[in-house]
Amino acid sequence: MLWRRISTQGLYTPQYTPVGRGFDEMFGFLEGGEDHNTSKTFGNFCHNGEADLSHNQLGSDDDPFPYTWPECTGFAPLPDTAVFEYYHNPGAVDIESYNPYDGVFETEEECAALCSGCVVFLAQCSRNQSFLHATYIFLHCSLAGAPSTNAHVTA
Amino acid sequence: MTSHYTYKFCAPTRGSFLTGRLPYKLAATRSNLIPWTLPDGTHLSYTMLPKFLKAAANYYSVHIGKWHQVRHCALKLSGVVNASLTPHLAVPSCLG
Image (cartoon, rainbow over all chains, first blue to last red; front, side, top):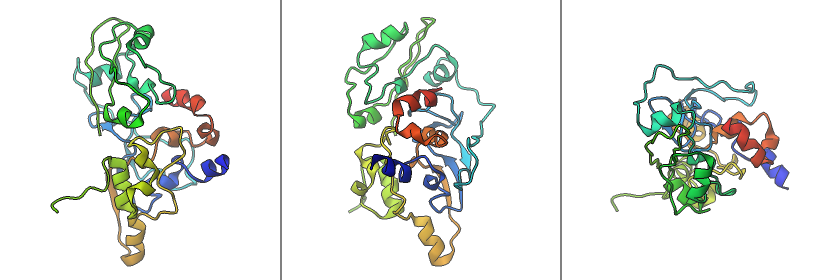
């Protein structure tokens, strides 16, 4: 039954995209949030730096896989900001690694064990998904020990 | 009444607006996140507004901006449907 449900339902087919849902055209982003300077996703589970800007893509089940996702170029994130750190500091990690099922980063110690220089952690992290959304936080660490700025992201 | 909200989170609100269904009918009401571990979304049997507009008067409809009725990562993994069955294996791939 689970397999049947998964194979017929879900959020992973072009049918669930705007064009798949009936729009003749779409221009926007599919995820819950993106950096408008970079058109890259944040605040979700995707790899940081993944572009999420689409124009009429994924309109058909016949579309080839993998789909192509246009990459915005020429952006210039402001140094010393969280977004800049997020995308440019290879040592930066973020709370996206946390998920409500595994409970990664349940404690600051866990974060500190991952890398040095953890600068923020929400002690009230819980397995409540609503909380996870409401306080979506980039948890920045820096392997180089340089402090980074946290960014609060809500939708 | 000066204002009305279909739901407290944005994704189910859009889903409700687009389908005419009460938000609690939409899986995403459990939170605004659409968990990658749950194969839920606004069910395809719920027709969204643009299809009605097309059928009624052949409207040309355009979606601009945020969607979030779909998981980007999951889409990229769609070639491997089994990824939804093994989320703990799928997500590291998604995280790159």
